[in-house]
Length: 98
Image (cartoon, rainbow, N blue to C red):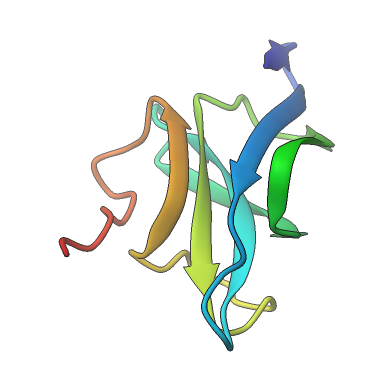
């Protein structure tokens, strides 16, 4: 759910993801497809039941990605994703093919 205003977005993401592989954490990213921007919301825990994360961002959000990272303090999104939703950008890293 995205509740945008001209200057910020109230974002609620409901998700369910399994335990990640050893040494991997999930990181939530907000994306603005029109501006080509990606903002790290932060690390999120695995969840076997639907769980919600809320954030207020100074960004008009068009999509979200849950990436799989080896470090929760990354500054750029990897191309290994657990989830994605919404409209992303041409410059958003695409999920790796398996």
